[in-house]
Amino acid sequence: MNLLLMGNPIYSALVADVFLQENLSINYIATSQDRKEGRGQKLIPPPLKEWGIKYDIPVFQFQSLKNKASIDAIRDINPELIIVAAYGKMLPKEILEIPKYGCLNIHPSLLPKYRGPSPVISTLVDGVQETGVSVILMNEEMDAGPILTQKNVTILKNENSEKLTSRLFQKGAYELSKILDQWVKNELIPIPQNETDATFTKLITKSDGEINWKFPAHKISLLIRAYHPWPGTYTTWKGLNLKILDAEFIDSYEFNGTIHNNIGKVIRRTDTDSPLGVITGEQILLPTLLQLAGKTIVNAKEFLKRNSDFIGSTLG
Image 1 (cartoon, rainbow, N blue to C red):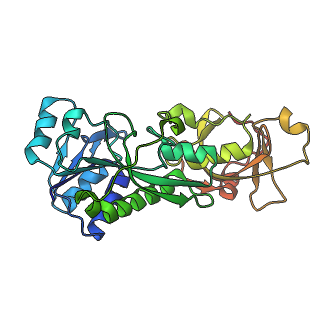
Image 2: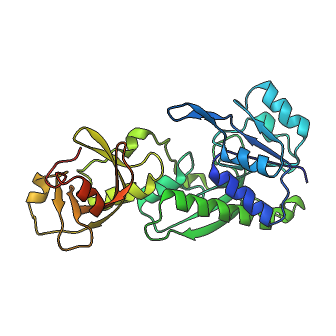
Image 3: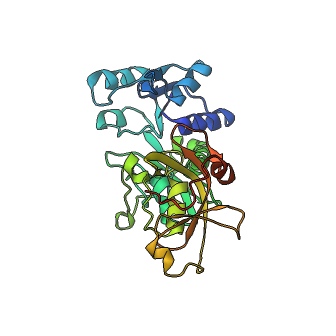
């Protein structure tokens, strides 16, 4: 079968790895164009492009899927099936109609819940204990096509967005490979989504990662997990950007009313393994991994060694 895989980030490459393990041949790959990154503005290729080069698979890079050149390029290779995994763009009707067996999308949520661009982040922000992955037949609406298969996945303790997204795409690729033969033989009937149950996620921006110390500590800890690796969770200290990459939290009553009068204040903890605490709207956040602008990532004890005046300061 002539198969085109469309995607961009490392999660797309993980999908390709699973297909390789399951003996599902990929004939072509489509990604976005290389992007300039860093101070030197060096061109960085999408991870799926690098995967394709490694395995000597032809790679197409499209700036837009709406122009005639892109549509004609896909039409010329005549894929019988298109699989989309984290491509990040909607497929126009002209492309959806090309493959004989349609366009299938691996979406990291239990649709119709969490449609849109940030399903995993939104799942973690909501603090739910279980999510899943869906394989759908794509249509012109975002993540609204009928479902071929779904699998539930338990969210592990302290699992962040990067790790959970990787697991979900790998699981989705495996489940797709299991049902693909049935789909091609017309032995699988897609199930329409229930529109009344649909929920939608938003496009995450860098500003979403700024910590609001008025939030409860447990909410901030969820955001730290959800926003790793991007946009990250950060605050300011002495005018510098301070990233908090991992944290725990505790309920504390020893400060009583003082907690709410000193939101954002850094305290030294003596009754826990973590020496740092930050007073929040409720509870105390215990940062365990921190990174000051221009510096390396360090644990809380090392951070205090390097910044002895951190205790007693107010963040944000």
